Image (cartoon, rainbow, N blue to C red; front, side, top):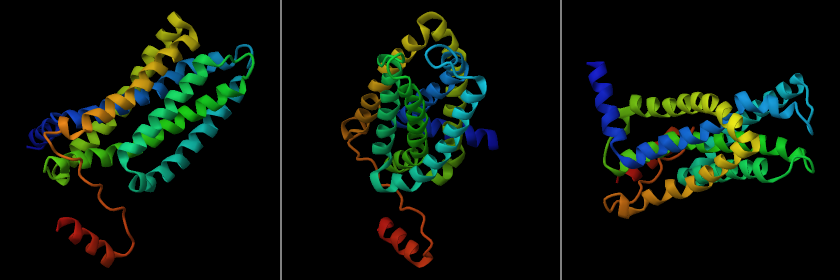
Length: 236
C-alpha cells in the first residue's frame, strides 16, 4: 500500500509541469556543483593559480561552511522576497559565476576564479532552499493538499540533488576533456542564463489554467496564538 500511495503521490505532483520544472531547475543548478568535483582541483593547481591540493581543500571547506550559513539565511528570506524571486536570484548568481570563469582571463585576475566558485556555490544554495516551499505553493494552486504528498515533495527535491551531483561529476570531466575548463563553464553559463526565463514564464496564469500561484504559507512563528490566527485568516 505504501508503494502504491507513493507512486500515486509522485504521479499527482510531477504531472503538473510547473512542479517538474522546479525539480529540473534544481537538478541543473546542482549539476554545476557536481561539475566542480572532478574539475576544480586540476584547474587550480595549474598556472596561474599553482595552488596545492591542501589549499584547494581549504577553499572547498570554507565554501562549504559559507553554503551552510547561506542556507540558514535563505530559509527565512524566502518568506520575504518569495520563492520564485529567490530561485531566480540564485540562478543569476550561478550564471554570473560561470561568466567570470568563462570570460574573465585568469592570467590578469586569478582572484576572480575563487570569487566565481564561492558565488556559484552560494547561488545554488539560495535557490535550492526555496524549492520545497515553491512546490508546496504549486500544489496549493491546483487545490491539492501538500500534506498528503509530503513524501513525493521530499523525493523530488532529493532526486534533483542526487541526479545533479552525479550528472555533474560524470559529465563535468568529459566536458573539460573536450572543451577545456573555461569552454565547459561557457556552456554552463549559457544554460544558467536561460534557466530563469525557462523557469518563470510557465508560472504565468496563461500556462497555469488561468490560476495565479498560491501565496506562500506564513513563516514559522514562536507565538502559537498568533500563528493560529494567521492560519485562520489564510483559510478564510
